[in-house]
Amino acid sequence: MLDIRRLHMLKTVAARGSITAAAQSLELSAGAVSQQLAALRHDVGVDLLRPDGRTVALTEAGRVLLEHADRILAAMEEAECAVAAVKGTVGATATLAALPSTVARIVAPALTALGADHPQLAVTCLITDQAQLRELTLGTVDVVLGQHYHHLPKTTPKGIAVSPLLDDPLLVVTADDGADGRPVGLRELATHRLVLPPPTTDCGQAILHACHQAGFTPTTRYVTADIAAQLALARAGLATALVPRTAIDPATAGIRTAPIEGHPILRLLFAATRHTETTNPTTAAIVAALRTAAQ
Image: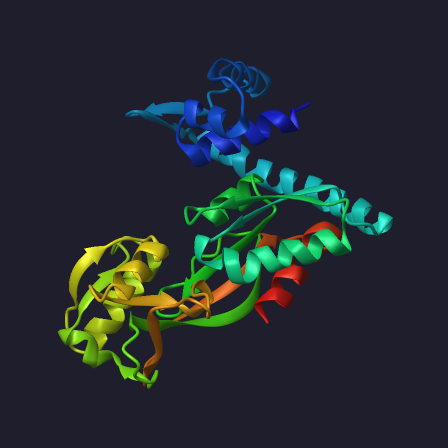
């Protein structure tokens, strides 16, 4: 009989691209993972992985087995959720992955509320903007607080359930000059020195796309994904920033914020979990707390 832990290792190696990376993710030694995969290979009697440059890739047999492994692992989680639903109680541990820009206004209030309502639940929170949905599919995290910019194609992995939380517009941030925060046409920013996230990020892509749609290429003087750095440069009058509303503390001194007129740049903030037919009380409680904080 196939060992479900070995199937999970195969899935992790396929996603990470190497035994070493998978071992780090699983908090095991590379030797231990190799031994378990060798045992799985012995169980099925055919090679499941092949060298692919500096990485490894699935053989045809490995790909077929992984398709079945996905269904087996999903069925196991479905069973766990069904038992949890019968118990009707929120569990003791869970892991949340969240964007840095959502911590102050959404994550912190949500975790505070969870602590009051479910004191037995210990939530580990990973603050990251990298590959959150992949980590969700691998079981590394239980809930993701992620984002999707409206102009970009949706790439939700199979087996993931998404719950929209709110539309979060980008605001134009400049040094506080005493003027009111009247809406700013995006075309007006053609003459501004800007601080922008790297073009490889979702936010950076969204801003560049919107500027090109408005008929200009932005003058980027500073490049950083660090929102605190963006706000500091704006406060100093060195650059204009475009920052999500939820990432800005309304009490921040020395800056002026203004909405974008006409064609706002919006990101959808969402909570994502692995899809199950039966609701998991623990992940449902976390999503509910995130939704309340977002609203």
